[in-house]
Image 1: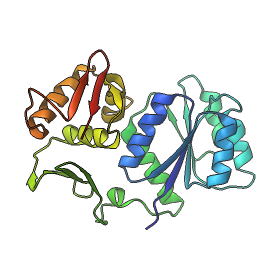
Image 2 (image 1 turned 30 degrees about the vertical axis):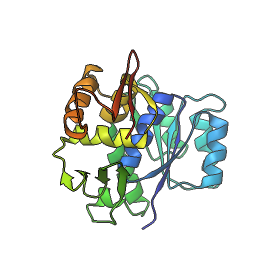
Image 3 (image 1 turned 90 degrees about the vertical axis):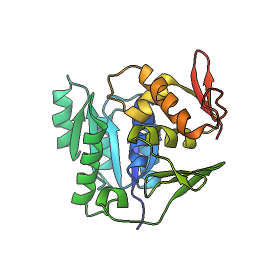
Image 4 (image 1 turned 45 degrees about the horizontal axis):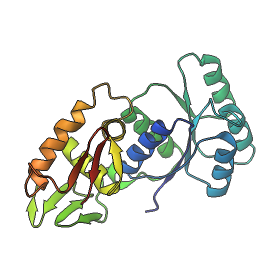
Length: 235
């Protein structure tokens, strides 16, 4: 089954990262642009299966993008609006958008809207969304193995009993190995753009995770603390 491609045109970088992380975790491929002109060119070139479109963009705005795309394309469009853009919501729908979400929104709700729009367009959902079983997807770093299909982590041959957020955090570290990651960045990407808790949550989960993956949790060699910044995963 082909993986559906979701295009994102949004100028807020932290939101783009959160959208890409959550959509990829749901089984989709993502492409993104941060201004109207680049986004319009990207959609025409890549021909994605669905577009998530912010209305307020540099270059040309989301309403004009809707207007231009509807001349020659029929992909589902989900627009993102601020609370005070009621008129723009109506105009967006009149210009051909299929649905809208008001900021701030739950990532869970956004994924549900994406699923619904793809179903309506007659496109297949990824295995994780449809509830089926697909081929195993394996990530490995040293003696750690993540089975994405089973949501299972092994250290050597031993399964690790990770809580759901510990698993999500480790997966995020795997996908950003060697990168300096701030606590705020980790919080947005793993807990979601709409999470209201503090960055202390990250420290607590890192401590729990270290107990399960580090040879010596008191002297970690896999998840390195970056003083004043956050963490770096060395694998």
